[in-house]
Image 1 (cartoon, rainbow, N blue to C red):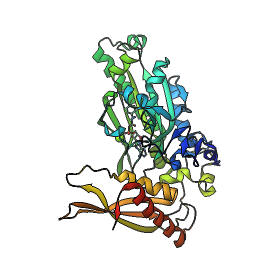
Image 2: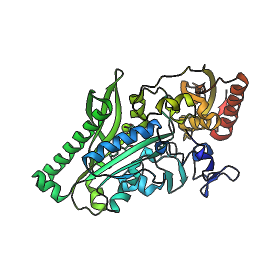
Image 3: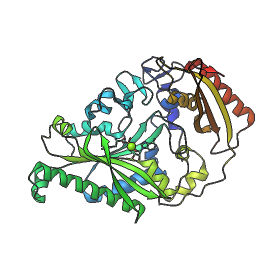
Image 4: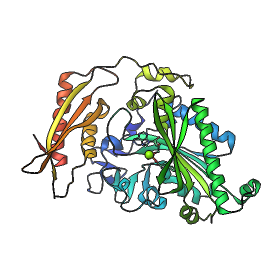
Length: 389
Ligand code: FA5
Ligand code: MG
């Protein structure tokens, strides 16, 4: 059962601070709504589906080689770890305030578990798995939530490994690392899903070369479940490993769990409803039986953004999603941009967003929804510099 652990987190609404960081500062874009969730650690709650899937994957890798397991590393990290040490360029979109939660200029909520790669390599670990909550400002729908969970795996190779494998040239070694990575991850996917169809897709990450994504065919669709590759040689050098290659992967636990347990909405991982948690008590892979859904309620909001042709635009859709999130929390199911047009004379840009309100656990009253919508309208004016139409 989910405790209210996050109530005791170090966010303080009255001073709008979090662990001493001033969230009202222009250097921060973190809301109390998100800050108060840090430390919930769904992946550590026994029998929670995220914990179950984490355990299956850890057991799989443990049985192949001894991996160091870390699952409680602090999600508050320096930008140096989340971006710089991974060779993510200074102008990369993932660094922008519309995508990432900043506490101050040089401190973020990690956007991926790769943030811990160089720390652990510098500590001397050769094989490790890191699981944790990651944070991204993003759209709102059934498969996107601002907090989700990743598992990172890294395995570095040594001279002895290559001698045993008979690889001498750098090229042969990289090939062997790549094959070991793919074989290991295919085995993991089979462990989870049985006999599934999968495919490798070439990908790009600044911190691996070459890079790949694994997709799994499920419910008539190809689903991207992880990114991976051979650790970039400049990172290997920077952590004092000379030119000995290794591999790394990062996978999304919710994505895998939604497929494995047939969980239809990502918000369900956060519910405290017994009708959800009772089904996972065995700690085994079961098919989730959805309980009755409460009716949705749709509300539209239209406004002139401050985007104008030729002017610097500061309005970003993710800011709108955040306003709705802060007001309605898990009572918002989806926010869609349903209409956008530019006024032919003034060049002003108009947006219309459709908000779907629905609780996972109960029926919402009209009064309650009207109040939420009114607050969304007020906060949009106050925080986004828009003009309601
Ligand atoms: C990364 O985060 C890289 N750090 C992964 C990596 C690690 C690559 C090590 C190479 C070496 P990406 O942003 O694609 O990559 O996310 C990795 C996985 O997290 C995805 O494949 C997906 O399973 C999951 N994921 C990404 N975004 C979301 C989201 N909004 N909601 C749920 N799961 C997500
Ligand atoms: Mg991706």
